[in-house]
Image (cartoon, rainbow, N blue to C red; front, side):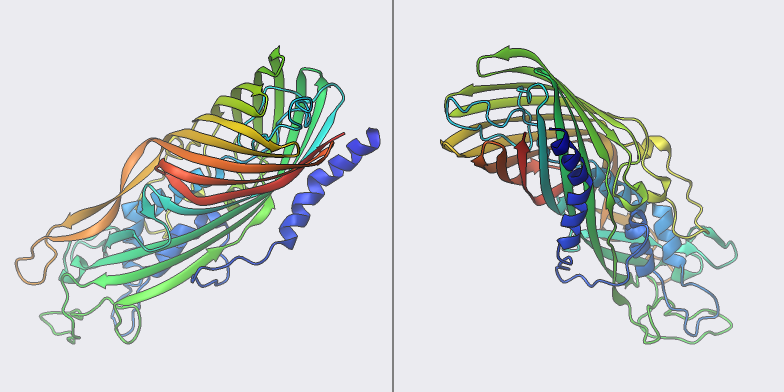
Length: 481
């Protein structure tokens, strides 16, 4: 047993690193893959700022950062970044906390189990359980808005670069007239997160288990930003400066050709150890084929929060567990509450341009949200060595940034002496609020012998807001000795 324990501890670190090294380079889904942005927590605001930079060819003053500062002052790149990062690093990770692998062998063989819920049974005194799994998640929407297609549309105002009351750190006062122009950005974000995790669990007594999960995280994020200058005030042709009009009539352009449209790309690909989870489970009530248990999961901030590999804070989950076996059918119900002890890094919401006059976001606006989660499901033994499982996974995140697609009206924007309002499609913040997500998990287990159990699961969205996956796939194995 001692030799097995030593080997398992070695696998805890070695397996996820090896698995990550064997993985193929990420598919780009038509997103180009330029040199990566570091750290990953700056990817979204940096990509949006780079897409907003103008060309100053044959312009008598620097207006290259006019809309970069305008984007900073709007706060929307920071809010989008914080909303994505908060939910990305807190997405539930499948584990193998399941109890003894063959505790129902007299009825049907091993229970089917679930990757998203725990059973009330424990391993048994002096029994080791070792598991390894990979969880791959591809995200498709945030608050019902498609992430990849460019449905995330943002419109930014000019800064107050010029004129008699120039103050470049503030939004435009619309004097001179070219400050009435706007910039539209359609943002697409492709996010794939792979977690390679090893799980080691030990039965301290017949009713008390301790365990640890060591994850290796492989994150691939690609952005595509389609920018368009909305010439709401300036003409479509170039007019040279005159004493009466000392500015070019067409002053906003992305290159020397005077183009008003451009698409830019950026990416980030961090890899490294994620947040380690320490686990304890006690069986409170034992019945003939199940019981009631309580568990505590403590997430330690070992992952690099700047690279979005971890949260940077301690998280504690308390969970109540019920499970029961009815011959071929098993049932389980888990209910938990997770509290977090800190905030995400301020780099998530820092302005890109040092000239921006926007103040910093407060710690309460960057606090990692508390979470309520409920998982219920059934397991069915279709054969002595094969089982299937189905779960409903519901979670509520408290006080996270929310977005909505809407329209915004900007006053005094059209050309001429009496400028009128302009209304454009836009994505705006709803502030911080609770959000609920409901997903379903479907899985299969194959028992290859007393100590070894293979598993495969898929997690699919049903309804909800926030950062939602297109699908999450989990595969791995567990063994006990």
